[in-house]
Length: 312
Length: 292
Picture 1 (cartoon, chains in turn brown, purple):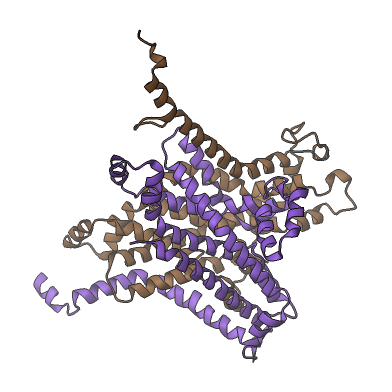
Picture 2 (cartoon, each protein chain N blue to C red):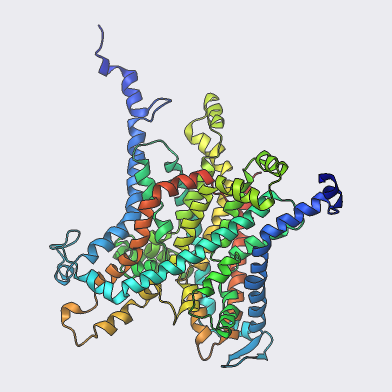
C-alpha cells in the first residue's frame, strides 16, 4: 500500500530539519526568533523614545496609556524645536561634521595609499604611531591644543576642528587610514606599473587608478567620519563652546535651555519640562542621522562588505 | 633624450620609492607631530607643574610628582572612579564581543528580509553618542525593564560582597546600553566571517563534522585575530566615550579652582596608563589563542 506523498517520512524530516541546501523549519524558526529578539533590543529604545515624545501631558500621567497615545500630540516637538534652536544648531552640526570629515577622508586616503603602495624604512614605526593615535585618550592632548587655539583666537571657530582633520589627526583618523590601507593593498600592482611605463606621475596613478577603485572605501569612511563628528561632544564642547553650538551640545544643555524659554513658576503645569519634551529633543537630535542612514543604507552595507574592513 | 634624463637621475630607485611614499604620508606625519606628539609632551610637562593661565601667558611652577601623588593618594573620588571604570570595562568587553559575534554569525546566514535586519543591527553605529545615551539611561530605557527593581534581586544583591555587587548592578542597569556599543564590532566580525573560504566548511562536512563542531574548530579559530582587534576597539571606545565618569571628572577638574590644568593633566596620564594596562591585559589573554 502506497502512503500519500505528504506522509513520506523523509519529506517530513527534511521539512523540519532541513537538507544540505536549505535550512529546516526548526532552524528557520530559531533564526527568526533570535533575530527579532535582537532587533527588539535595538528598536525598543527608539520606539520608546518616539512614542513617549508623542504623548500629551495627560497621557504621560495616565498609567493606562503605554504604547498608544490617545491623540496625535505634536506640541512636544514644537517646544523641543524651539529649545534646541533647531535650524541654527542643525546647520552648525552640518558644518562641523561635513567639512572636517571631507578633509579627514582625503588625507587619510593619501596616508593609506602611501603605506600600502610604497616600501620605505620606518613603516612599522608609522603603524605603531597610527595605533597609538587611536588609543591615546583625547584628555592627554586636548589642553595644550585648546591653549594654542586660544592664543590664536581660534576657539569657537570651526577651524579648530578642520586643521587637525586636514593633517590626518581628526577624530579616529587611524581607523580610516587602516581602511584605506586595506583597500589600496588589494589593488593589483600591474595596473600601477603599466601606468608608470606610460609615463604617468605618482599623483596621476593615485588619482586616476587607485582612487576610482577605492570608491567603496571612500563612501564608508565618509559616512563613518560624518557620523562620528556629528555625535562628538567632548572635543566640540572644548573647542567650539562660545562660538558654535552644535545639536548634541545644545541637547546636553536641554534642561537649562528649556527653563530659559519657559521659566518654571511662570508657566502653567502643562508647560513644565517633562520627559516627553526631552525625548522629542533627543529624537530631533538623531533624526538627521536616521534619515541619512536610511537613504544611504544600501550603499553603506554594500560598501562595508566590499571594503572588507578588518583592522589587522 | 630619454637616456640622458635617466642617467642624470642619481637617486637610486629604492630611495626614490621611499621618498614618494613619504610624500604621501607627509601630511599625516606633520599632523602627528603637531597635534599628537607635541600636545602629549606639553600635557606631560603640565602634569609636573602647577599651571595658572592668565590673559597673557601660562605660568608654570614645578611641583615634580605632587599632582600624581594627589590623584592617587589624596583625592577621594578619582581612584574610586578609576576602579569602577576598570570593572565596568572588563565586564562590558566580553558581553559586547559575544553579542557582536552572535549577530555577525546570524547575519552571515541565508534568510529572507536580511536587508531589513541588517539595517536595524547597524543602527547603533549611527546613534551611539554621549547626550543620546545619557538621555536614554535617564529615562530608564537602558536597563532590562523592571528587573533591576525586583525585591528578590535587590535582596540577593545586598548579601553579596561589594566587589561582586558593583559589576552585577552595573549589568542590570545598563544591559541594553552595553549592546549599543557593539555596532562597529559586528561589521568587523561580519567582514572577517565572509573571508573564510567556504570550501573549508565543505571539506569538514564531508569528513562528517557537524555545524556545531565546525563552528568551534573552523569559525572561532579563524576569528581569533579579529576578536583581539574587536576587544581593543571596544576598550578604546568605552574609554573615550564622553559620558565616561572618569573623563567627566577630569574635565570638571580642569576648570575647578582646587584642580587646575596641572592636576587634570596628571589624572589624564594616570587614566591613559590604566587604559594601556587594560589593553595589555586583554591582549595577553587573547593573543596566545590567535594563530597566524
